[in-house]
Image (cartoon, rainbow, N blue to C red; front, side, top):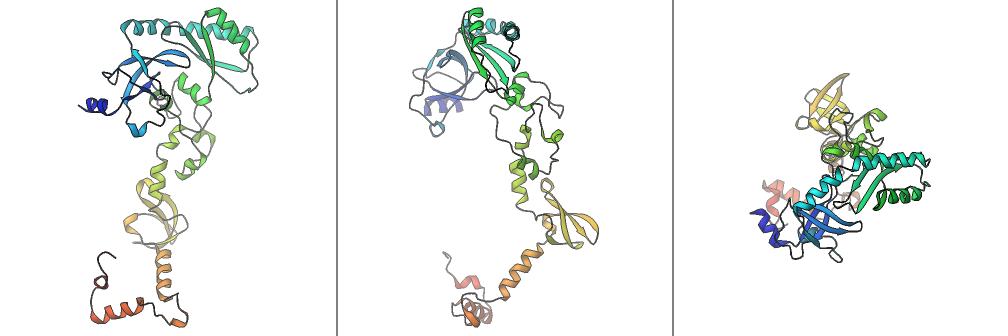
Length: 322
């Protein structure tokens, strides 16, 4: 029922070329019977590619409609079989690429993946290198003659390499990038600091040599939780007496407090922010700041006195709209 409604309301679908790849938008054209999960043939800058329809995209999420390409057609059984046939040849192609690169003396590049298009018309080699001046045009020409097809050499970063190779992360579980992450988010040292994680490279660096992607997962929750808790060094009132905050525990909604040399955990509903209360008290005792020598004629003081004399709720003196 949900799919049928989405089909009527939108004429754009999001497709993926890989299981964990980015989502690309295509117009459905005359193919109004497309359903999520269907395989389709689309035209890209690398020729015709096989992709899977993931979902219909609502109009408000389509950023650029001008020049949006249309889905060519639905994939047929022959297309799917041909895709499997060419996939079976990718490992041999990668080995041949590495051997040819070694023969040509290319030592600064790491070739990690070979990928055929569904019909074998394109062959893409993904590689990583830190040598920005590396020229591999000669290797591309040699591979083009060897495989007799269009060759693309695609430079990828360390995170993409880890995603392609798979394996396990430092936590002992399969790498996040190889299991569910479709697009990499920016990661910063600040995220580790906010979560109280040790800044040693062993603690915050992933197998790719970059900051771990998982630092992003709970960052927003830590930031939001900390807004409700006092910072370190703040004086607060607790059931155990007045103390100073020595540690903040956002996920427990509590703080660790030093009360006369004894460390106790106090939850948010149990403490009082003494410094803030003292500041409010001083402000109240200072009187009206708009007029000098206490000569207040703004009406606020008179209103408060009148309300106290009549023993009425001050809120009754104002209209509900105010």
